Length: 344
Image (cartoon, rainbow, N blue to C red; front, side):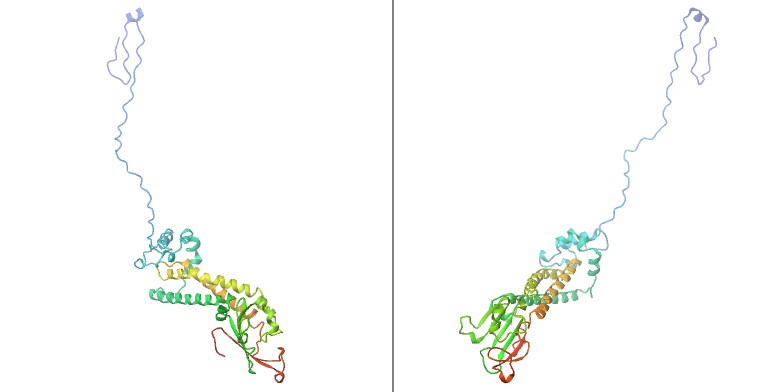
């Protein structure tokens, strides 16, 4: 039998003889074995893989940057000023932590410091010169102290003590008899809750020459004095519209001065000045002015000269009735003056 001599793509087929076929010893040829072709060459993986590049993060603004330079800036510079670490002006700072920026500003910067209204009002001013700031704020500090002393002095008129009321009254009425009698001569001091009388003719009496009568009791002594105008309401000053209102206004105005002393010292240092402190001082100052105006206006319109004579000269008989000059026993002269003005 012819054998395949040349190598072809298919595997060779074994040769069989006739005798093999006749004897039945021919077996099935073995199945060809195929091997997978060798895989294509691949270069080995490198031992180090470069990490993926991260997007560049924006750098945080420096702590002394202005609020408008970055969204992170207000937090950093506010923290510096709250903790006393501001880097402006060679790190000069107010004398104590009570004069630094309050911590609540750092808790709510958007509400108290960096909102539109605070920024607009905070930019109002005349000059950025440090000497101008030093001069104006120190003058304002001294004026604030004087204003507090004056308001506290006026608050002494709340007292019903003769010594305090006679030295810190709202207004003084001097009553003199031009006919020469000294019996009815008196100095009358009007306060916020009562009236102090200084009548020398009562020196030897058990009551004494100096005594105080509350506005609620003023009508009880009005008939016995020559100073009260019968055509007016002797209890006008006792109304809540004046007395209670004036007392409450002064009791609020005096304590409002205390936080302004610390805030003004903060504003003297430009490295610690913030919008909210400027706004706070403006609001407190306006409130104090309005409270004091409330006391003054209600006194003049509701109490001053509402129970006593306004005329400079009034002629009276022995009973206190107003009579013509030729029938008068007393020629009472009334002079109104501010407390402290001793001119007569």
